[in-house]
Length: 322
Image: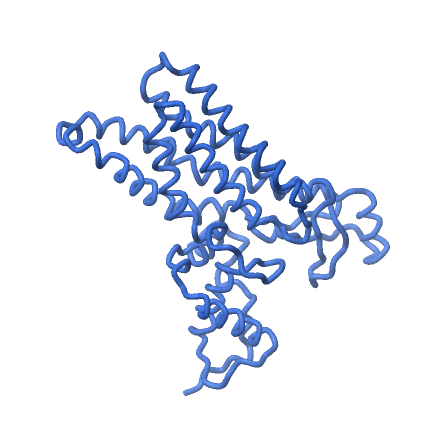
């Protein structure tokens, strides 16, 4: 029996995005690391299916499950603003494999200065690419701005890590293990705003409930970027704070002293266990489609809303990015 798709809306979220649990379920779905292994032709098929569904031109015999799978692939691999395919490393679905390797090695090789510099540089290079890929694409960024942002963020991370390493040389070993997290947190506060500075300069596109563009708001951009910074720090926190405590105790065990070569792989694997849960949880802290009362907008935008809609008791919406 053929499924009735007449009332199916492929853009309607499967889970309530007004609740934290609904958002976590949504991001568990689209940040599934298995999607990075999906062939390009299957991703292209998913985009075609989503676009056909939006136009009401779904091929006969198509099942709801097929459309939901296509939507999952589409959301994981294509940018919500432009519809363009994102680079694999910058996708949120790559956060678990990419993050577990980099974080694991950052936590393992924190003792020597060359290792600290190298892994902080690798991590911020990865973060810069993720931040750029998941930006609000309605605000273009020049190559010069990207280069300046990348250099500033990387320098901040390395300087923080090196400085704190020097300050904690005489501190207990566990304190030294927490230096990478301090550096990552500090760098996130610089990396994300710098990589998305164009949004802060020109404003982020805000729309009404019918997706009609109202204008660009710098205040909305500041709110969205702040939420992303909080999410990214939250994403890294459990693994980078708890894992050093776990490894500190494990390394004191007799059998662990005999297999030191396995310490790094074990740390990488444990990082992956944390990130599998923390990536969707952190992404779900705030709605991706943010709602902002008109009263919080710039005066000129408030005037625009009042002229167009005749009242200010409305809200505007924007994509904060991830």
